[in-house]
Image 1 (tube, rainbow, N blue to C red):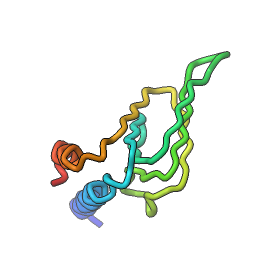
Image 2: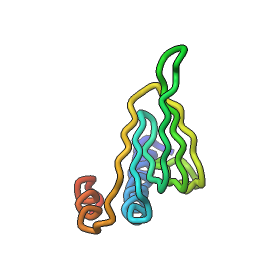
Image 3: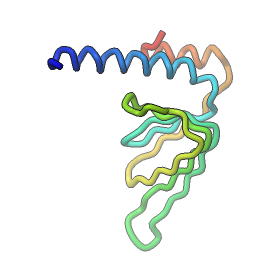
Image 4: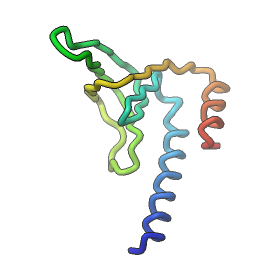
Amino acid sequence: MSSEDLEKYETEMELQLYKEYRDVLPMFRFVVETERRFYLCNDVKLEIKGDDGPVYYSLELADAWVWDMYRPARFVSSVRVLTFRDVNIEELTKDSSAIEELARELGTD
């Protein structure tokens, strides 16, 4: 496989991921971003840890979808994430116009 073939394959995989994201977005309540991954989920619990050392964050997500084009299955029932870096949690509105606007901003129309 040439480097051009590999690049074409990765581009196609990323496009499929964008389309899947656009399709599944209305099914979820929260968007969660960490330094390594992007998640959609319906329940999220955040705990700040590290009383005796460096501060870190413990996230528990339920009913989640993981943005990762190399995963064969992106839907997971639960996820636990530990990170020392920033975490962004955003609650989505069920207003379809807001969801459509987010999809446009991401260039997935």
